[in-house]
Length: 212
Image 1 (cartoon, rainbow, N blue to C red):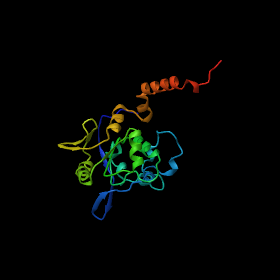
Image 2: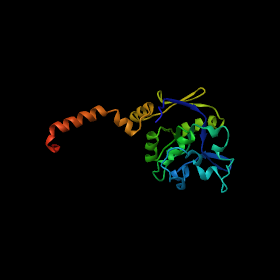
Image 3: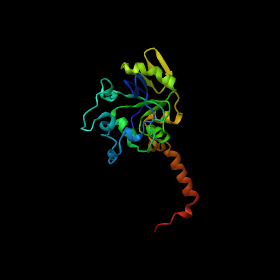
Image 4: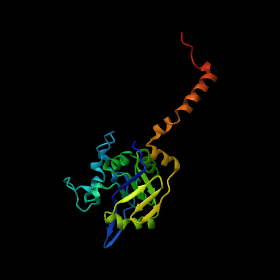
């Protein structure tokens, strides 16, 4: 897993349009993120082209020009902004895989489904929870294609003269900064594991059969 300290890039905002009103798209579920027909692979690469497949392409496989990730400069977005309950639905880990493979490293939303939220950290994606009021401060700059900086070390979102702090669990932050998944995090403590095994062998030697 790649180390994550800070990232600069364009932010794409997922919006619904009702008349002349725009609002953050809520309840984006994992089937919308990566439809079920693409779950046959166990590879983490190659899924980016099918991210939001049913919103990005028409029935003939042509790009839908109005979809945000099909518009320049958002085809190169590294940050995604959305509404409440992002990543709800099934627990498919292909969802964060497809997001990361597209090139998105940060997702900003008011709330996330718990399993998806945790899967993001395990795959090198930073999910940031912000109130809708704070997110609305980002949307205009996002739609203008202004570059964002997300600094994980200082826990700041920086856009021009604006700085918005965000919270992140200390353990998850440490794993992202060091580029560690669950296995890597466990191996950091391998000396304690070795010590425990040695003590167990010494204290319970009778459990180990003697070999001739």
